[in-house]
Length: 145
Image: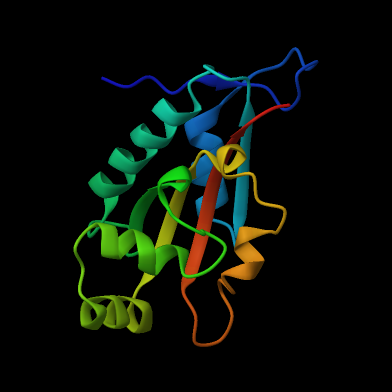
C-alpha cells in the first residue's frame, strides 16, 4: 500500500501537506503544468510511479485522460515530438499515435527533467496544448540545485 508523502511548499517551510491531494487538485484545475522539486533521493520518482498507478486505477471510471509516464532522460531530443517518441518506445504504430493525438487527452508524468539539461522549455518546444497538437496536463519532477 502506497502512503502519499508529506511535502513542503519551500525548503524553509515548516507546514507540510499531502502531495497526492495537491496533485489531484492540480489535475482537477485548468492549469497545465505542475512542477515537483526536491532533493536527490527524496522520492520524486517513486511518487511519480505511484501517481501513474493511481491514475490508471481511475482511468475509465472517472478519468478519461490517459496517464503516460515518461522518464525524460530515455528520450532522445525531448524538445521535439516527446509524446510520439515515448509511444514509439512502447511499440505504438504511427497510425495508433495519430489516432491518440486526435481523439484523446493525456496526463504526462515526466520524471527527471533536471537530468535532460535542456535550455529550452520542453512544454513550449513540443507545442503542447496548441491547436492540432497533444492536449495534456503535465506533472514534472526535478532535483533542486
